[in-house]
Image 1 (tube, rainbow, N blue to C red):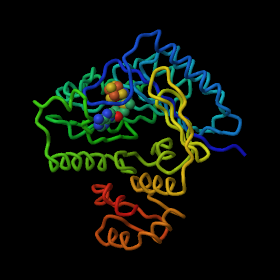
Image 2: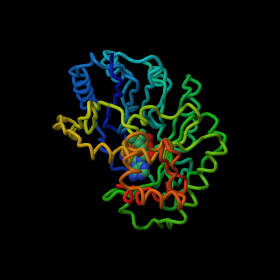
Image 3: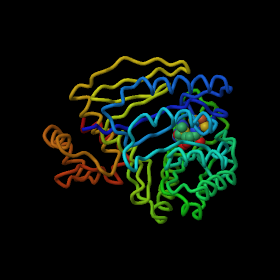
Length: 352
Ligand SMILES: C[S@@+](CC[C@H](N)C(=O)[O-])C[C@H]1O[C@@H](n2cnc3c(N)ncnc32)[C@H](O)[C@@H]1O
Ligand code: SF4
């Protein structure tokens, strides 16, 4: 029987670097991008696909939508060498600037059925602070165009906690969406935003108030939180991310892509001409630690042998966290409560 596998593809190109982002990506010319696509296709080709059936594919970045229809079509030709499961979830990350009708139609024709658009904010002043190239209006138009072309499963990324910024989420647009990734801004060392000391930072209480307000708008619009930063309408949870969080196998192609296959972890280096890293066998404790850390971020929590181990080895801490309303244990799953999600790192430290 074939084993389920998820596939991640990294596209390390952007039109410009945003002020807050330290993801690995480059602003490159056509020749460099074409050569990268060649390497990516060769890497996919070389992978032994025979034993696997692909359940989810995620093309992330960087900004994969900067690829031309011809380049993305080439990548999908390689991906089609895998056997895809019926109804496989196929996602691509994009931003409003680089989404034209032809590109969206190409995605649909290739089998992409989940579009993720980096919007970050619907306020033009905030978009400027973030160094984004698009306006709020362009974001709304991109979402509407994607719906018009036929996308039924659309995510947008938003960022709150931006100094002197706001998300300004228009509730009418929520009707067009099935999923929201709502990130708290991380001020990464060395980024332009972090270096800009003229901007007034929000206090911790102000950031929590902003988060609470946004989450209540999402709840009212029919989205449920199923992971610390992710909200979906029922049935639209991102299956690919659930594979990461709940412990399934995935293979990553491209620079800086990580893999977890047959209990082995490996990753590619983060250069355009990338190398394969060495394999690393996880110990029992590595697996346990990962499952606790990732599972407790989700509404599914931890279950089975992992929950048993927590009950057996950290029973006192678990009881205390439950009585303080940070965790729940229904006998099958140990789950973080809404209150617990605010102090998730402390909970994990107590349990591990
Ligand atoms: C790979 S990008 C998404 C696609 C596209 N590159 C874009 O930005 O529109 C992934 C997402 O990570 C989030 N992100 C990046 N840097 C962040 C930071 N420092 N703090 C919080 N979220 C961040 C943004 O919401 C961004 O949309
Ligand atoms: S947020 Fe997206 S578009 Fe901006 S630099 Fe990071 S990966 Fe590129």
